[in-house]
Figure 1 (cartoon, rainbow, N blue to C red):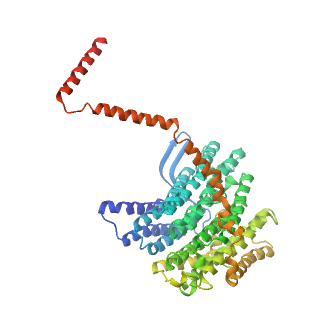
Figure 2: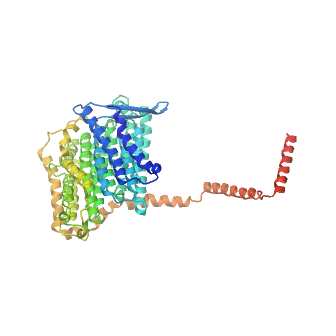
Figure 3: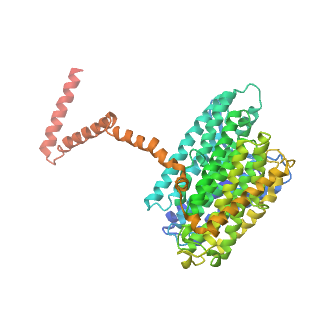
Length: 612
């Protein structure tokens, strides 16, 4: 069974290699059916392998662990790094999300991208993306994890800028790549500090060392804060959240994959995986919780002001990841992973439903140009409604169970009313508003300009993933009991009913506000005040970073453009050019010139011999 582990990331990698090399060997472009079979099939088989391992090894066994060492990768003094995999319950949950939801997104993509001329390139990138994420979560050491970490960063760059012929798409890809590199640099420094303190980067050994006496808490605090910096960048949390809304430049299924199953969940996984180290530092735990609380509010209010259907969902992702960080910061490890799982279901459903809407209205994304679409695309309407209900955490949806656990944990963290709990409640209210705002403006009310030209673009290969995700989004809350063993922590059910009642009331109040503002009094809801414009622009973070960082950096580079180093290199190049011109003039084709040169050279050679 251990040998099966290698095939889980290897199959997507083989799919990528096959899609890249087939045209080289066949001298022609493969058919879309073949590309789809390779791209979708490789992920599907990986998902089957994961399901097999889950049933045969992990089901009913809370302490199950699988390991596999493929080869010794790095061996330098105390640094022993193997290309090795480590799978426990936490890894297994991530594997099921990545391969399961990833497979459904791949299947949907076969229909969504059917008319795209770069169909093969798209699936090649998608397979590589899944492979990198699988390596990230299966790694048994932080160096291999970092390899997968950088891999998902590269793939996100390739997929966000997939339609690279439009300059804005390339700019969005560059922004995502550069902003996340800031966090990645912090994370790399954190790895150095961990190795300095523990003399290992093996994850199980680090977890064991965290409970040993004599640990330098100050170094661990700095290291975990630096790891938090990496998580903040990859998961688009405050203050590095600015790249994710612009990442909507890529194809919609790519957005679903990034938001639901791969890149933005990586930061949550990193902190959850290293949680024994975070428990050593109250400062680091508080920082994680505060980052999550700030992010869920900032992004939630921004989502209320957006007019692009994909940007609404993008800000909602940032906000929901903020809830996961809040959960991690208050020690609700199982709650964070549970919400990560339910979020994967309903966010993939929402993005894929949004993709069907965009195709049906001929690539219009402005929700104010839509309206009344429930009559024209009823199946998509049902799926989107389920997704919005789960996102808002309405009672008995999967989102309700996972978010309720987070809010309860925030309450219990300080044994009563506290800022983190209040932030979570306010976020629940805001989530209810923007979730049903986008639903009402897109599907209900009077028809807009885009709605009148709507034609259902769903094909069977697109409806199947939507239907499966809708079921998972509705009933994913039933998976809570198995997740209680992920960290060996039971969910506390002994709490005041009024706390739960408040958590239930918040999204319902948000639903009512959205109905009143954007359906009952739609014209009032469309008016954009100064505060709404501020939220629309993401609280001005792009403007601030442009003036504090981007413009000064460009000014410095312009000043340094003609520095002495460049002058030296240019001088060497110019000298080489002059010498070339001088020597090449001697090659004139005249024999007497060659003989004279030979004689002069011989005389000089003899003179040197005599002198020596």
